[in-house]
Image 1: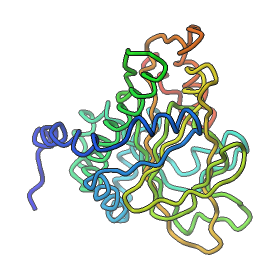
Image 2: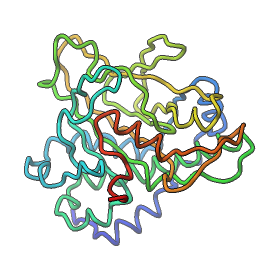
Image 3: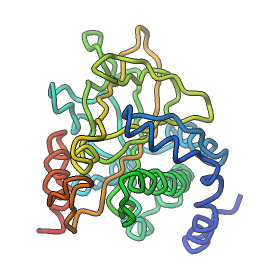
Amino acid sequence: MKLLTAAQLDATLEHTRQIGVSNIDYDKCSQELIDHGYSILTIPVHLQKDFWKTVELYPTISGTSKHEFAYPDRTDGFMPFGMEYANSTNNVDLCERFCYRDKYRSDHRQHPFADHQFYRHIVDFESGISAIAERVLENIMLKFSIAEPLETRSSSYLQFCAYNKEYRKEDREYLQDRHEDGHLITFVKATRDGLVIFPNGEQQRVTLADDEIIVFTGSLLTEMSDGKIPYMDHAVLNPAVQVERSSLVYFVIPELKRKYTSFIERRDLDLEKIANENHESFGNIPFTVTAEA
């Protein structure tokens, strides 16, 4: 099959980005996030296909590509194993990570890995899930009578996690310890069960159908809503037997180079400072440190 050029891919993405996203009940989703901190959505068929293709294609990526297509200083590309850890326990996440940020897509084109089919499906999935995220946040804002949209795509990123069997440790309860992401909202789609959330502090297993994805809240949204919207702690259980598990996670972060006021009390908020501190607490480089250097 002939690969699309970068220009052809851009045109295709722009055309397909909104396909199927209007079929989601955003009013219900946004209310569930406000009331409970999580919601389960049905995603379009093409995003389901992209998800499973990334899982299928990840093992075909060479070690050379993983070494060369790595930009940890900007949370982009293949990230070093063990770099990220739970900010509550300092236990490292027992998975490999690939991060994709749409703001760097033009830079990616200079690298041969941008032609890999795994990368192409990652790009396509991000295009669709970011459109869904925009509508979810738009509906949340409307419920607080705020018409001004939140700009998020350039600051947000998609992460592929590969929980390979060799990383499992017998003495760990979780492959990824309990935490909250410190963002606005997070979408998670995985190949198997293992994700747990903690509504009202009680551990609850997440079970999704093939066409479903879960979205839950982070503390940036709690801050913006003056505590009205709860953030959701979550973790990934360590299975009783060695099994492979993969997931796609979309972290939704607001544009950080602007000022915000809270929804209800209209307090001034420095989300750049809060988001950078949250991100760094997991072992990552702050989002805007590169721009300031």
